[in-house]
Amino acid sequence: MRYTEEHEWLRVEGDVVVVGITEHAAEQLGDVVFVELPEIEAMVAKGDEVCVIESVKAASDILAPVDGEIVAVNEALSDTPGLVNEDPQGDAWFFKMKLDDLSVLDEFMTEDEYKDFLG
Image (cartoon, rainbow, N blue to C red):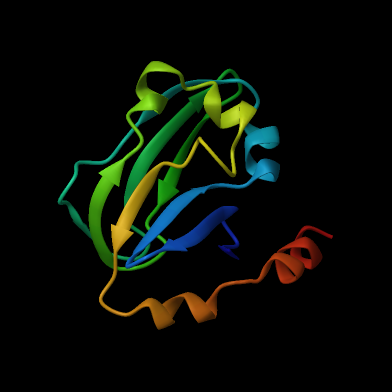
């Protein structure tokens, strides 16, 4: 897995990248009450707002970590947004992206680098 400074994780599964938020981010948000997912087949650019997460504390945007196409979304989050708090780095993934070049993931932090980033 790779990690962004915005507390997103990226996991390669075959030719797609699965994107979610880290346990640290889920803890900072508090109880998640709503998740707005992106449209499948949407083309996104790095930094585009892709999802909105609302918690009892605040609303936060999930940004596209890389350029690509949204090929799947986790519909379970629409019905059960609390999954984000229960299993942020597992069942609570947000979307899957197809990238032209998976090597762009090399620019993101490894797990050890992310732990150092958190301090």
